[in-house]
Each structure stands twice: as C-alpha cells, then as structure tokens.
Length: 316
Image (tube, rainbow, N blue to C red; front, top):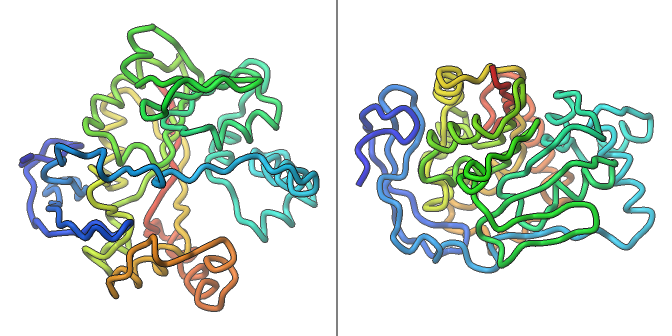
C-alpha cells in the first residue's frame, strides 16, 4: 500500500472507499488525499488490474461512410484547430469543441513538419481526425492494443513511453488525453516524455482534476474517480508545480467539464452503474436536465472548478 502521494510524494490523509461503478462490479477501493497538493491517489493497485479493462472498456469510433457526416466532421475539426469558418462555428455550437484539437491548434503546428505522438491512442480516433486535416507526421502508441496498426497515412505501435525513450525518438507535440490518470508512475512518465520532446516541444495533458466542484459535491460518487482504473487524479496546482519543477513551462490551460459530471454522478449515488445508464450524445447535450447541467458546467469551467482540464506545457 502506498502511503505517499503518487505525484508529489507527500504524506496522504483522509482515506475513503470508492466502489467500481463503470461496469457495476462494486468492489471497494481505498483512495487518499494528499496533504500537500490535494491530488487523489489509489492506495493499492490491484494485482489483476487488467480485470477492470474488459474488451468493451474502449469504445472506438470508426470513420463514417456517410459523405455528409464526414464533411460536417471535417469542417468542425478544422474550426477546432483554429481554421475558423462560418459553417465550422455553427457546427461547434451544436456539437461542442474537441479540446484535444483546440489545444493542438494553440501550438501553431505545421501540417507538413510538426511531428505529433498520441499516447494511449487506442485505434486512433484523434489521429484519424488529424489525418483528415492533412497532418503528415503523426503516430500513436498504446501498449494495450493487440498488435501494431498500419493505417494508410500513419501507424500505431504496441509500445510504451519507455520503449520510445530507448529508441531515442523525438516529437514536437505529445498528447495524453485521459491517459495520465491511469499511469502507475506518473512522475517518471513526465520525465520520460520530456526526453522525447524536441526543444520547445509541447506536452498536452487532458485529465480529471481533483480540486473541483463535483468531487466536493459527490465525494466517493464522483464518476471521474473511476476506481480502480484511475490511479492518480491530480490537482491543477499539484500538476503545474511538478511539471514546472521538471523543465516544463505552462503555456495554456482551460477547464472543459460538461454535463456528465452531474448526470453520471447522480446515478452513481443511486447505485446505477455507467453501463446501465445508456447515455448518448443527445441525452448529454439536449435533454432539459442535460442543458441545465451543461450551463452549470460552463460556469464552473470559467472559475477553474470544472472536473477536468486540458493543459499545454512547453519544454523549456
């Protein structure tokens, strides 16, 4: 059992129990709050952690064969990257913004020259979008895919961050979207990513944040704890301080929580697992309750109290 914070290695306090609720296993796990940075740490990683990542854990979105849907998606993604258009703005108002693409756009990439690595990319949902936008130097890694994936314009490798360090590869932008919270040794991973970045390269992290309204309101029922898959849920100050002490500069950040922090957590309070909630795009954006919670989430984001954030660091 770990007695120190997985981020800053300070003593832990305020231990509480959280049940596995995504699949309704309801097995209990202990989490503790860091005295110093207020991050949440899983006290003991299960020996059989793979048990909690069944085949239906990952939901991969494939490219649609519908030409209209693909055209709409292309316009929206271009707008998210910063290539704004009237149509793109309208679509974004309806469908929302892709935080990863927006963060990449903030880095002012060159589609022909900027090398982008997506860590923990699954089958390449984000990379497919970058491919459609004309990015020529993109790749991904995921140690949990069955085998390497070879797509027409890019590849996904069954590798870890450590594997790439050994190969002495370099990248201009490295993305970890909802991956950081799953890492057993987050600080070591940040150190290794620094080795992979070119001078002035960017690290984009999208992760839940512990010091948020939803955790204060729902406690053990806050759905982003996601026991036991989320090993560390950092606080924004804690993550910022650690990264800056290691050689990163904070360049941009924005909180991007949505209605799900309320919709799912409310159901967890009632004992309803995520797999039984049958939420979809329409239910989480356009139902009356979703609209209300969406507006509340937007207000919390403006106060840096949303339950997740996208952060862009630059290598010093």
